[in-house]
Length: 413
Ligand SMILES: N[C@@H](CCC(=O)N[C@@H](CS)C(=O)NCC(=O)O)C(=O)O
Image (cartoon, rainbow, N blue to C red):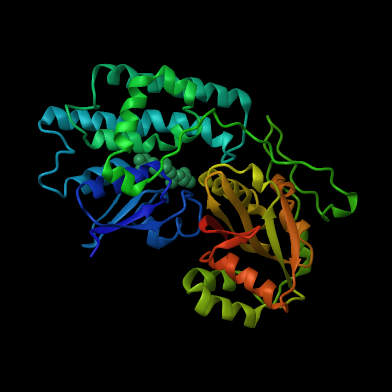
């Protein structure tokens, strides 16, 4: 039986740190995949907020009922379960020094790096000046590591401790996105140390192939194409994001409101989907209640799949797309996934929207121009299968004769 559940994401640094520490001490933790979005339905539920009142990840729920939030506390708690662990140092000074690094990386380093790479990844609105400033302060704060690791093999003492595991884990995304080849060459001590930590067996068991950016990833503005006038929705959507001015939430009434109340209440379906097995219970319920005159089904595939690189970045693209569909939440349900591997992946998905056109629901954000919308026929067996596969997120897709396994994805509900 697992020691407890860890609520988090497999590509989230804070989550990784706890999983590696547990692995190091042969402690079994069950990862419950939980969005890094404190506003998401599950994160705001009573069930989750009693474990972590902020709705953020990570959070821990022990098999014995003990619950804990805050990455540092969870990492220390999990590590200390092994009475003989060497990860917490030998002396009181070691232990305090370990806490010093945990706190430094969690509170000083990670937020500064996040402020740099999150806008580049499309997670947050991009503003060149702010992002450049974030880059400067991130590089300044991480120079503390280079200085320390030039004179020391590990962060504390002569062997790996939780400080190293925690710091390397929290830096995985920075190395994958912004700590590029040039930076690594200029910072050999931190790079040597990082390579040592990520090549430990326990680390590799959790993150088999951490990524290294060749160059700092570039912000890519949402694709824009000339839009035929006829495609404009009834009410004006939010302005498309530009480099310095992110899109604002639409203030006009949603055009789909005019369609009135359908017999299939979207919230009923969303609840069914969230609480039941998709294949055996939710989908049969869906087809029984789906009304083609009230809703339409759409295949929604990314247009620029050949430009995708790392799967976690492709998954972030989906996250950004869905975040900016917020204004249509009352009228829209669907799921999109990344299939394949790094440098060979695609973003496919399927949605159901109120009404018979895709534009009113999808043009509330700027990202729709990067996607191709193909109407599906609910009476066609192949189209029904496509919807079920996309929403169940449990089977691979075949692209140009090549099978691509499901890697990650998001459900918009
Ligand atoms: N102080 C918390 C911070 C947790 C945190 O910020 N988690 C991020 C992911 S690493 C999150 O859940 N963000 C979602 C949000 O802020 O909505 C800790 O150290 O655990």
